[in-house]
Image (cartoon, rainbow, N blue to C red; front, side, top):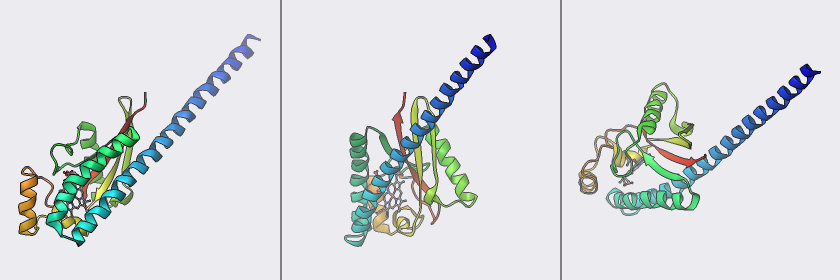
Amino acid sequence: MQKRIISTLCSVGLLFVSQSMMATENNEQQLKQEAISIVQKFGGTLKPQLQDAMKGAGPVHAISVCSEAAPAIAQKLSKDTGWSVNRVSLKARNNRTAMPDAWEKRVLEQFDQRQAAGESAEKMAFAEIVDGKYRFMKAQGVEKVCLNCHAAEIKPEVEAALKQHYPQDMARGYSEGQIRGAFSVSKEVF
Ligand code: HEC
């Protein structure tokens, strides 16, 4: 009799444990979906603005679009969603917003290793719960258009404009396919 009670209690206990594990998994799945949709909004708003500016007035003008539009989009998305939204890089251009913290640095280093091992940036991402926060990063790969402002060799007028806006710019010397940086979003979960 006692055995049965104990075994029933155990099964009920197990049920609770597995239910709460499932709840955590569902929750993480949902957080991931949210994170992906924020990143898609960020990229989907910034890229057309960059492309229009490049086609219209050219890369020098596009630099000022980038320097105003990118932080503005990040701020608006943070405000609208309650997530912290940012872009980071191991070689930051904007040294006020894009310097990675220790966790982001590790993930960016792993992205570089994954890219060197042959993985494309297109779907490269990483998620983890750290210190009560759900954190998600999505790699941004270098495409042809990016080389106008992130390659080693760029037009002198582009170089001059970059120097003026970002005297401490480190975001140069990239080639196509490399990891330029990443979107980094996080939300408190506890
Ligand atoms: C017209 C020049 C220009 C082009 C083209 C360009 N960028 Fe940038 N990029 C910038 C500027 C300016 C910043 C700094 C924006 C800011 O102040 O937030 C920047 C910042 C970034 C950042 C944020 C991290 C950091 O270093 O500040 C990433 C990531 C990035 N660019 C990726 C790309 C990718 C990927 C492409 C191609 C799809 C691209 N860029 C094309 C000018 C450019």
